[in-house]
Image (tube, rainbow, N blue to C red; front, side):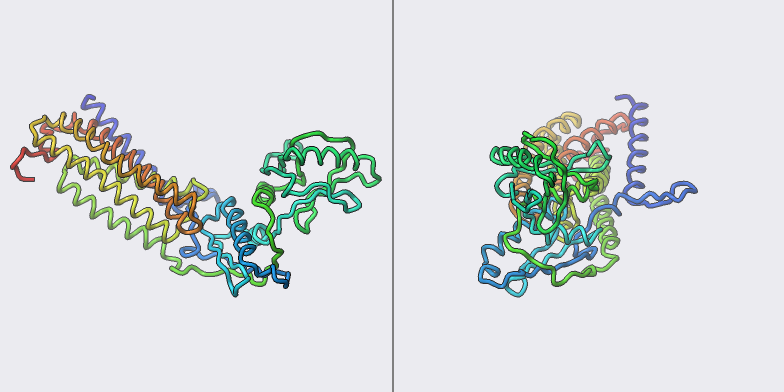
Length: 426
């Protein structure tokens, strides 16, 4: 790479970093219009311990012995967890209260009624004729459900996938109902009639569509409830109210300030000890942090909580550690008699195996925690997983590329990289 090309690349990279930094942290009105750009940081979903939220308490309507059965209670909590996870509320907290009640705390709720519908709906899907006869039910005859665009009215619909038995029952139902005076097939979800299409002919199909000019959120809610299965106990909502943040409204700003101070200290130490290597590490860490913010904002299942912040801090620490391992390997190679260029090449090659070994192990651990553990542990696993994957890119690939960009601009590479032979001073 020529000196002129290096200058152009560094200039373009600086502009990209500056633009990305503004996009991540600045909110402003666009020109003289009423439209406002919201920073990427502001759209990161926060958990209930940072932003507050909403809680509900569900109490069984039945008073018989089964209503407080521990096994049924556990199954109901698992189904509610599945529904909330499907909606992106991975940081929701689900606990038992007073023995047979379920308390659910949900962070950053936009629509209380929608969330209550997801939680409280028993989820028993049934297909009935006008006389009330049940032809199909969700447990025995539905394999899956998902939301899809309805091309006819521009809204959304729910597509049901039948089991083999369900497809057969659906064909029998439509063949009978088409000849009835009330030729509608009533589709019920719990106590709510969500659709009642007219049947004019027998329908033989492995799928069916529930239409009703739903919004995307409504269609997703219905599909989520159907997919997760019905609650084993019918509950009513006895308490429902908003709760304030446990850490205060300024917690987010304070966290960013503390993170900035910590990174500044790291930058100073890296620059003093490693000089040019440290400069490449600092730029890589800046890119790492900006990309981290972007991914936290765009991945739907991420909600920032205290465990999530712990995952971020651990990931940043491992990113710094990876750079140190690589740089110390480069210094070792130089002390063994290699040239600066050869030391960098061999140092990255040898250190990459060590870095990959440690980080891949952490990645597998994070994936297992994400798949197996509920609630706040899942939030820790997601932020850690994102951070580790990004750190592999910035510490191994980006920093090495930056050193190649810097190389044509320095006269004494050994001095720029702060490399000394064995027995020399650092």
